[in-house]
Length: 326
Image (cartoon, rainbow, N blue to C red; front, top):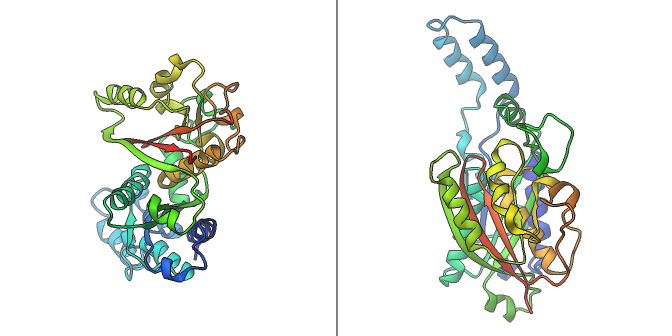
């Protein structure tokens, strides 16, 4: 396994252990597994050779040579889009999670879709236990080339995400999984419930669409918990969102990107885990020096609800609320 799969398998095992499921094969046999993962691996040397060939060719002479290179070096035995399924397969084998399995692709909204699917199935009585999560290794050359080549990657010193310039994205390497379970099922088996989850809304607008600002205003209007955990990463894609909370006075807004980096598919899981930790008395989960919109504002110990708002880097947004368990 590569680094990304190793992170995912370890995080999944820790989530099952914390939920008291790792030594309960009868429950693992009925636990569904929903993963969000990036596309398939790339051959960096083949990619570099291909680019070199393209740059040195006339437009009409390179097709046959490029096709020959692609056929020899891009691992034709596996369709690249199927490789993310191997993350779920590895977790199923190593952690004995034997229920239904689904893999979601599509950056931040892939994580949202996995949680939304699990939430809908549990509330409809179609499932009782779902392990959701994913992993991201930001050392991928192809990923770094994309973010630096598109002018999005952080080029200045690491700083508070709300104060970064045009280039604000600092990618993170992380594995994050959590167990979603019906409240009755968790209570019957004596599980330690960290928080309850309520889906609020989900949108699919591009961040360049004309109606995006109105959609943002609706999100903030519909979220009114004690404080907000978001995944905004700084740079040119943050100014409109920051303006929504500027009028909020003493309402704390923290971003996981200031501490974990931008985790793409894994962002929502990281946000939910941090919110659950806050609801259970951990006051220093996120360092406000890097993630707080106002460094003086940090969550208090007596919070009872947290809004989690996840923004797609290019498209989509979602909000859900976590409440503490009395």
